Length: 132
Image (cartoon, rainbow, N blue to C red; front, side, top):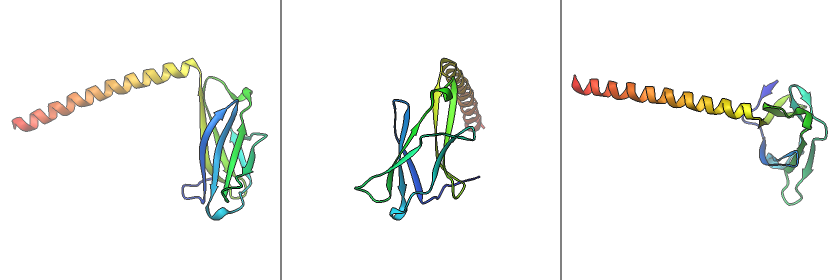
């Protein structure tokens, strides 16, 4: 499996509404879209669809229904894949649950403490350099 940074296909999220993740698939030169799959924990999701934008050649609306059984506390990551080329075109994550909120707050508190420690050490270093 390869990850593609310079792919001729660009995926942009537009919204998550009523359990359906939606995005835009832009193809350079108005090409035909590759076969797309969206996977969660290496399992393809069902019901993924692409609809052409008649006003803009090479632009497609990607719709991904998210099964409720996949949603639980924590982070759920979904990969948007080009099946033919075995490439990851993009990804999105859904974060849920109170425990995650607490984890993020604890991590931010830890980062703040480390930043304060670095600021003090940097100021002490600057003071020592000016005194010598």
